[in-house]
Image (tube, rainbow, N blue to C red):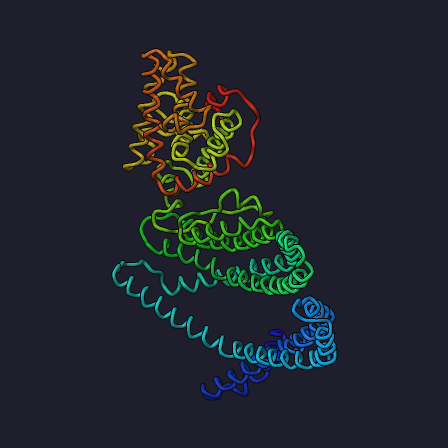
Length: 569
């Protein structure tokens, strides 16, 4: 419809451009208004034509109701005669007279009276439906307008109470961001539309199959009303399919527009960072382009994820994915959780949002202190995440922790998992240096500085200083230390059975061995507590813990799960 309406208008613009070049502005507005009216009536005609293909609401309802009433006439007549002949206070003559009267008068009058009553009913229903169609949209529009005005007033009042200065971008940077968004619209936007259209039949089949799967049991539970309920189910099924087709078309438009807005939004944030002045590397000027391009690809990837979730019937992931995308847009997170990423066929990307002190800014700051690139810092985090994931899955497979315990994301595990992983870091670090699994060496003069970084460095040094005493305490002390770290300082009564049993082994050690274990354990747990207070680290750690139970590891002994060497990952 839009193609037929807009096509001739666009074609006429090229031929009429010179004729209207000197026209007044009001004449141009008048011409545009006339064309909009033409588009409206064209769409209205197409909608009316589509509706005319189906049966008329009033006539169909009247015909079916009259037919059903006539079909019930023999049953009603039989019940009336049975009721008459069941009267105990009347004799056979009176019963015969009543029966003759019912047959001779009731049978011919019943269809006439019933047809008149049903005609009145369906005519009234027609006018009610017409009134709802005319008055309903007007009332809904006024209601939405009033609620929007109220919400806008409340928002403005709230913003006035909390004034804050905002660092803005220039108009040149604004147009640059829109240009990147337009480029994404012409590339990733087109690919997203094509991907959605190609997968639309599978989405329709998948959602339809899920609808049938969830509604058929309720239909069978209706019992003797099943035939009537089945007719209603058929109408609901047809309406649902039509709604799904329109919903798919709406999603195509939404994804196409999102491929313009999202890259422009991301690019504008990084352009603001580039325009701040001060010291910055040459690569910063390319960052907006790179991040905007990645944002455009992320729209394509998200479209693939959402369509796959609909095809597979993973409706639980739709709400979670939508919530996480809103968190990404607000800067609370930078990527989707592992559970959401498993549904997509395309590889995911991480979009860097400039949010002041966000995760990307932390990576740049750490990389500057260490004299390395941000890719090296990101690789170090991925290595740490892999180590924690392996330790968690080994503990799950060996019975130290349970799947329910992991899915609950308890604070003890949020603290214990990084504390247990930090023990491997301390083990592999010789002397006063700290060596990460990726080979990065941190020294006193080559490390990040700040309140948190200085506290972390001091705790690591305290733990390293206590390691010789642990080595002399024996293997059982080492096993007990690993269990204490994984417990995160939690109460044994609230821990899984296997982990609680390992923690209680501390009481069976000699006093010197107990002190050696606690001397290593206390600094690492304190550092893990500080890490859990960092918003970016905590968010990523929650996603990582949620992924522990998604893959079962091999069966190992308890000691093997606890006493992993420092060479992991």
